[in-house]
Each structure stands twice: as C-alpha cells, then as structure tokens.
Image (tube, rainbow, N blue to C red; front, side, top):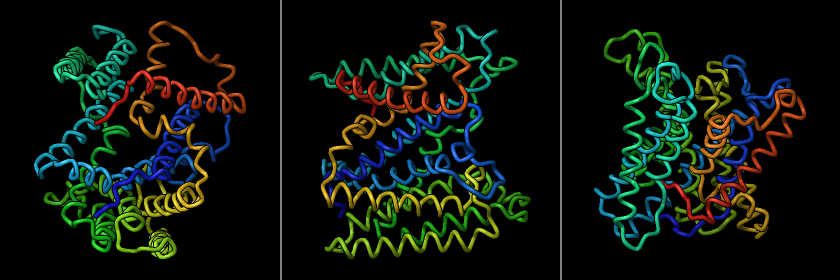
Amino acid sequence: MQNNQRILSIDAFRGITIFVMVFVNELAGIRDIPQWMKHMPAKADAMTFVDLVFPAFLFIVGMSIPFALQNRINKGDSFLQLQSHIVWRTLGLLTLGFFMVNGESGYDSNTAVIPLHAWLLAFYFAAILTWNVYHFKNKTGSYILRIAGIAILIVLAFIYRGENGASMHPHWWGILGLIGWAYLFSCIFYQLLKGNIILLTAMIAFCTAFYIVSKQPAVQNNAIFSWMGSQAGNAAHSSVVLCGIVLSRIFFGSNITTTNKRFMMAAGFLLALFISGYILRPYYKISKIYATPTWCLYSAGFCCIIFFLLYWLIDIKGKNKWIVFFKPAATNPLLTYIIPGILFSLFSVFRISILPQPYRYGIPGIIWSLFFAVAVMYIAKGLNKLKIRMQL
C-alpha cells in the first residue's frame, strides 16, 4: 500500500517545475538569448534545461498517481467511482488543451463573433467556473456554477471560427492534453499491474519498444498497424509518467524500510535509465520535438536526480522553509499554469502593453521573464487566499 502522507519534496518539485515552466514560456518570446535557454532544434541530438520542463511535469504526475488513487480508495471510492474520477480528469485535461490549442492558432477574428482575446478570456473564465473547488455548504451552488462554466464552453465552441469558416478541431492536444493521455494510460497500467515495481518497469520498456516499432517503415506503411504511429508520442510520454510512478513506489510504496536501501534501489533504477538511453542514442537522437526514447529516458533520469536532492534536503534534513515561495504553484498547479494566458488575454482586450518591444531581447528580456514568473507566483498566492483553486 502506498504511504498516504503528503511528501513535501514532491510538492516542492511540482512547484519548482511550474515556476520554471512559466519562466521558459515567457522566455520563448525573447530574442538574442543563449541556445541553452531555448528548446533544442528537433534534429540537434541534444537537450537543454528547457527541454526538461515538460517531462519533469509528466514525471511528477507519475509520482503523484499512487498517492492520489490511494487517497480516493481510503475515502471509500468504489472501483467504478475511481475509474470515473480518472476519466473525468482526463477529459478535463483534454478539453483544456483542445481549447488552448485552438486559441493559439487558427482563430479568425474577422469572421468570428468576438475577437480572439475576448474569446480566450471567456474560455479561462469558463474553465475556472467548471473546475474550481467550491466550499458551499449547499452543493447546489457549486452545481449551478459548474453547469454555467460548461455552458459557456459549449457556446464558445459553437461561435468559434477558424480560417475559411473552420470549426474547432485538434491540431494537436496541447501540453495539458498530452499530459491527459499519458495520465490515463499510466493510471490504467498502474491498476492492472497493482503497483508492482518490476512489472511497471517492464511497462516502461514496453512503451519504449512500442515507440521504436511504430517508427519502422514496415509498420508505418502497413494498413493494419499504421495507427501505432499516431500513438508513439503517447507511449513516450507515458513512459516518463511510469518512471515517476516507479520512483514513488520505491520510496513510499515498497517494503523497503531503510532510507539507505531506498536510495540504493532508486540509484539502480536511475542507472538503468541512463544506460538504456546511452544504448539507444546511436539509433534515436535526443529530441523533445520527436519525443524520442533517449529524450524520455535521460529526462526521467535527470528528474530522479532532482528528486533525490530535494528529498534529502527537505524530508531528511528538514530544510523546508524556502519551499514556501513555491507552495502556491504546488497546491494549485493548473490555475498557476493558465495565469499567464489570462493576463495576456486581459491586457490584449484592453490594449495594454506590459513590456515595450525594445526590452524583449537579451539580458533585459531574461530579467523580465524571471520577474514575470515571480509575479505569477504571487498572483497564484493571492488567488489561493480568495479560495480560487482549480482541481480536475
């Protein structure tokens, strides 16, 4: 059975990842910055810390799954209630990703009922209404607000107009949607394998093999198996989530009773990830864009190292006062993630420029991106105090 107490190092890891995600997303619009502060090109056979942010979030999703599912079981959820929760959470992530992707590209303000940024602002408002955590004594109020949010989403989908009058469609699922698919598959694997560390590790190998097979010309050109190519990315992302699950089980769900033995077993898992990545690298370059097995395995390995350091510092040594800054993002990650989008949509509606173009380059741009990420954290803290908290 998974230890059900809250682990501060996992919270800190989540909060730091969201903070860095906000920072690098803002940094993406800055010119004349070093290559190590950007995503590496698809064919570069390399990665930067920016390429580690997305897999870090996938990894943390994996570390949290055993706790989340066990918590719902402890609260009395039946099997069907648990599956309903998993499906509802997946649909929420897919919906959010679907709307955000369509808002990022393809929207035609000339033929649409309302301008793009007004449409986006309405979407974020509806998303908060739908997935906010309400504290009404009478649940009727929360049901009304959720139904209102869903109704607004339906209206926004109906009035959407893309190029040549196109309706909303999945160009891709967006970051949240990709997380949603990986979460769904990993939850299924975790339950089917009953949290067994060895079997879950074998499933990581299976996902890696699935990606490799799906990229073979014989498979891609086969009418029966060509569908595998469309699922290669989901298999890759699921492998990273599964790595997080395995590490979580090693530290908090296994029968190992001493910290030293946990670290030794985790170190063995880390070594296996890096060796596997090294063996595959001559055949598959490190590429976030292509979600290659080497990128997945190395990313998961680096995430293990980061967690080792955080766990040793926070949970073993008790040095945890500094993580207060990251707490708003750790406890309210979804809302923190969409705050930048809300701000940009709001400023665009009122035609407010928050940063002059001359400052969107070099060191001034880097400083601005860091300041913006810090500001988002404090906004999240304020929204937490107002009891605005999104939970799928």
